[in-house]
Length: 269
Image (cartoon, rainbow, N blue to C red; front, side):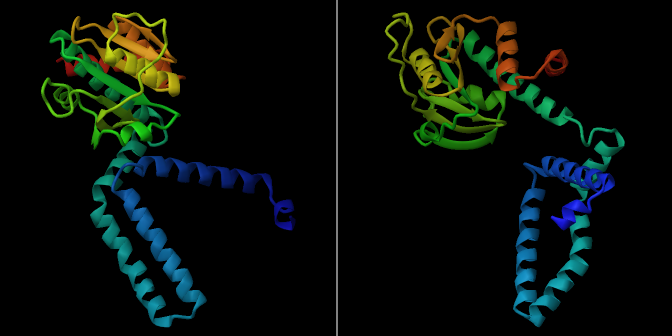
């Protein structure tokens, strides 16, 4: 308490700035090989603390040598990551949300490209976006993929007679985690009798979780969106884009939508 009483406004500002910088650096290295490096450094620090506590002089000497020459080795090994961070800092983008926005744009763009490809050829498909409610039970019923999302991969997974075409694909953030997954069928008696198993599964998973499901009908090629136990059939592409942005990034505004259309125009050449 005495220490807290001695804190000045400058100390508080200093702590907040350092905390924010550390948080942004963690976001920067998340999903890269540098995160494994940080785990390794943490283990080394724990070993060093134990060596000091237990007076293990030889081990302390080895760790000091590791620290002395390890910094130079890290600069050489992680040169691409350091160059990328300095480049973003120079452009004023190190602490911006541009990367996250671009990731969302790319994720939705790849899914829509695959969905449109499948719809034109009347190939049935069921794609589920996991949100706050975990879908591990359903992920375990399928085959683990754990891949970055791409329109080509999504399209190939649903090609008729392929091993995984008959189940659902589950997407968690920017990863395609599993395919061929079994989902619970909705037992809602008011669902149209025209809807088949895929549509009932899409509605069913949205009833037991906050997941969002996209369905492509193999009979008509229509695209449908299921959320909160409700389904919108034959949804138009613009409405689908707006709804996905609204649900996957609740605070997404016009800037993100314009950014998506720019990405889409670049992709289409």
